[in-house]
Image 1 (tube, rainbow, N blue to C red):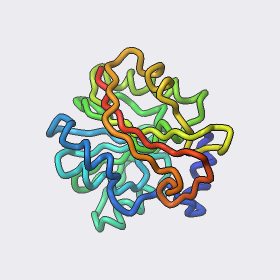
Image 2 (image 1 turned 90 degrees about the vertical axis):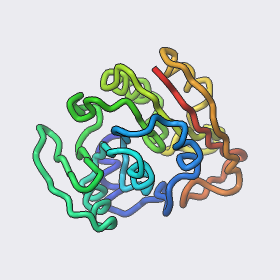
Image 3 (image 1 turned 30 degrees about the vertical axis):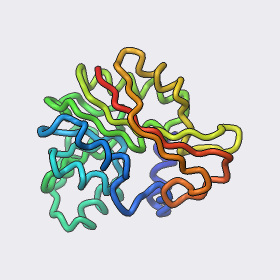
Image 4 (image 1 turned 180 degrees about the vertical axis):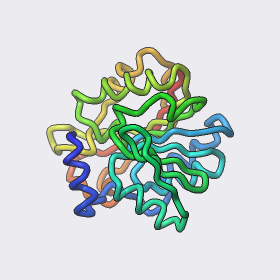
Length: 212
C-alpha cells in the first residue's frame, strides 16, 4: 500500500485493526521469546501490544504515521521527546523508541543489538507484491533473529485487503531461509477481525515462531 493510504487511515480514524488490549496470541507466546534486551515491532501503530512487550523489553517500533506516534505516548501518559534522525523522527519516552517514517528506509542503527521481532500487523497489511520486499528488509536489518509472527487466512476471492490473507504456503516460501514453527491457531470465522466484521466463509489467525 502507498504511504498516502495509511496517512488517510490515521487522519480519518479508520482504526478497525486496533485492539483494546494486547493480542491473545502475543500473551500466549510471550514466554517463548528470548527474555530481556530489545524487541522490534514493524508498523506498530499505537498497539497495546507494545505495553505487554515493555514488561520484558525495551521496545523499538517503526511507524509511518505521526498521529499514531503522538497518540501512543499521549494515551499512555508518557512524556516523549522528538528528534530528527535523518528522514525519520525519533520519538522516545519510557521503555519506547518509535521511529516515525518509511519502514523500508529504516537504518540498521535503529535496531542495532536487537534480535527479537514481533509482527502482528505488518505482513498482513502489505499486498503480495510488497511482502517479499518486507521480508528482505527484515533480513537485512537482522542477520540473526527470533520473530513472533501473526498471520491471517481467509478465501481471497471473498474480500479485498488490508488486512490481507497470507496462506501457510506463502509463510514457508517467504521464510525459506529460516526455521518456521506453527505455534497457535484461532478460528475467528463469524467473529470478525479486531473491530472489523468479515463476511468470509472462514477466517483463521495463526501464530508462528521463526528463527534465522
